[in-house]
Amino acid sequence: MNTRLWGWPVALGLLCASGLLSALVSDGWGDAWAWLALGLPLAVIARHLLAAPPRASDPLEASDTPHEPQ
Image (cartoon, rainbow, N blue to C red; front, side):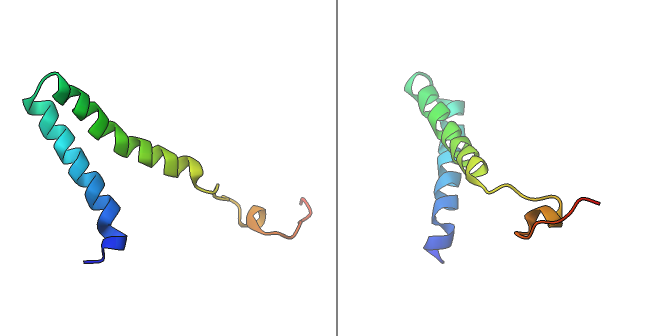
């Protein structure tokens, strides 16, 4: 198994699973762990979405050469 490729997704999956299990069976510290374990993957997703370069919907906008309006 390529741990460089699958390491972080597996870790986030296990974190989510532990958060879901903790939310179901425990109170007090378990609720806090559930919030943390389920919120951290969302924070990772938000970080990567905000850091992603914008996509150009028009291929002419993506080119480096200027073009004249039609």
